[in-house]
Length: 151
Image (tube, rainbow, N blue to C red; front, side):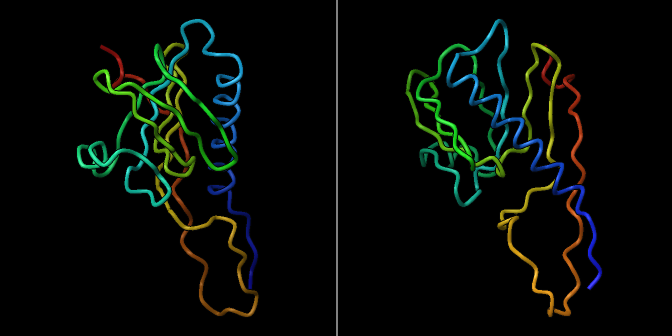
């Protein structure tokens, strides 16, 4: 079997690592200056945890804002949990990093977008004796235009 470097998957892991580092710093030190985040994620991800009423309202994807009011931000290797305020109703969420579609910090015009989402384990080892072709490469990662977030 011919081995190749999966740059798309490597880039996605690196981008998720960047999000993990940023959120870990915010959990420890709070949001600096005017920084705030728009995070869009797949609500149907099998490991995403959110209230049934939120999943019913956003059956495919949802964008959350981390800015003025948030509590209990805890970051792990695989995702983060946070309590956010929805119409004066605090709701706990768990968002796996591989459920994230976009991560945007409009205060510094920074954004990441994940083109495709696979909910399979990315660390599965390939069987060297397997004659099946490798899966097609994942979509490329790219920087997001912030124009759609401007008012």
